[in-house]
Length: 83
Image (cartoon, rainbow, N blue to C red; front, side):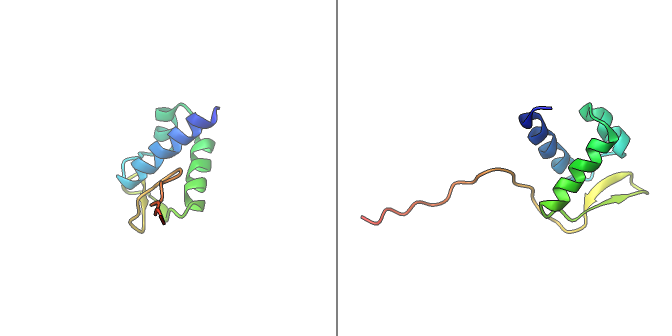
């Protein structure tokens, strides 16, 4: 899988986790066209990036235990012209 696809999938999974709408791991895997193992790896990566992610058996979705916003990539910094 290309890096662009992985990044796109990570962003999608993060968004679905934020909205508590992932469904089961199997549902999410089918939705993204990947395996259950890939979904577990995505969740592990997102947790490694600071996401306090858990899974609710009763609601059958991943969710954030601590509210957060996922940001991926570079963000511009303010440039101060010292002239």
